[in-house]
Image 1 (cartoon, helix red, strand yellow):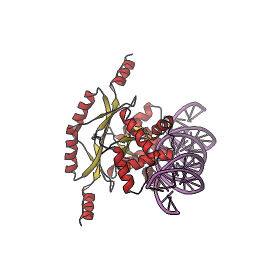
Image 2 (image 1 turned 120 degrees about the vertical axis):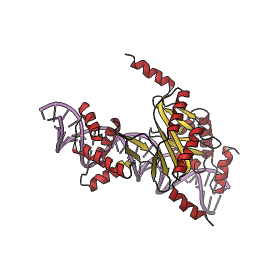
Image 3 (image 1 turned 60 degrees about the vertical axis):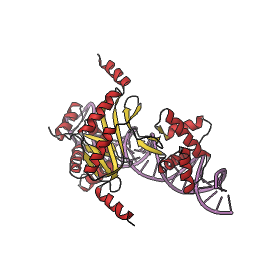
Image 4 (image 1 turned 60 degrees about the horizontal axis):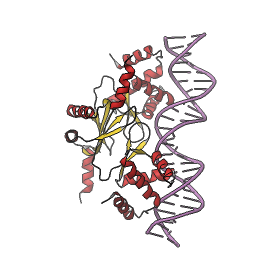
Amino acid sequence: MKAEDLLQGHIVSHHLKITKERNAVLRALIDATETERHVTAEELYQKMKKKGSPIGFATVYRTLNLFCECKLAEQRQFGDGHARYELTYNVGHHDHLICTECHKIIEFENLLIEQQQDKVAKKHHFTVYSHKLELYGLCSECSKIQNKGKKR
Amino acid sequence: MKAEDLLQGHIVSHHLKITKERNAVLRALIDATETERHVTAEELYQKMKKKGSPIGFATVYRTLNLFCECKLAEQRQFGDGHARYELTYNVGHHDHLICTECHKIIEFENLLIEQQQDKVAKKHHFTVYSHKLELYGLCSECSKIQNKGKKR
DNA sequence: ATGACTGCAAACCTTTTGCATAGCG
DNA sequence: CGCTATGCAAAAGGTTTGCAGTCAT
């Protein structure tokens, strides 16, 4: 089942409507997945403007919220005041390494960590539905640059 | 070295000034540590108003930012649109379990997770300076209520 | 006295909402 | 047709900033 189908199913079952705007946002989000992956509403807005399918800002936000509701996408806050959206459908869970210098984002998975999280949750009698793990620091390149600066 | 001394040191070395407002915010933040621990600017503002040391909103924010700069406190975003501040000085690192229903926040530490994080960082040649791990779900009490509701 | 700090209100910025119009089903 | 979606602009909500006056050093 493709992302498009999940969206269509959700739309049909909730008596919503398929529109060219919703399709366009989904396509833009899928495109973004190939490259940056974590996109802001503004970035999507600009992308679609350039691509010749201009769309209102409000519609971008409304559409992204719709996507989040049907679990097609997830919203994340990396702390710069801009919400970022990420396609999650058919993508395994993963966490993030974030370079505070060049803003590069690397994804990773670690089973052992997930297992420990379950243990912690159980210990506190929590029913955990989701989690976020973010490591902030310098990527390999930015570490090098930093070190150069420090020598003498 | 106490938190007050750290602040004073930072203030003196940066040619800033010790004021009753800054002292009051620090005291309010220390007080909060005993109970809720993760406080919003608004909560501090209200707390200080009630305590008879009213303060401007802008000053609360400016002071909290100052605290973050000198590593006395940290800002966190738990996703409800309110930045929360937490005293970090002399407090070991910890992560958070967050109840999405009653907003209870439980802190925990897990060495194994930290070790795995180091491994992941090393694998990607990252120099990690900080991290956030947040588990979202229902606390024991809210889980119970939820279950009750589900039983026809 | 000098320069930093405060309070107030206005400005900011991102996100949401109201309303009239357009368009899917 | 009926009802939802869109676009625009205005509103909202949290945080920051400018300014004139106050206060620490």
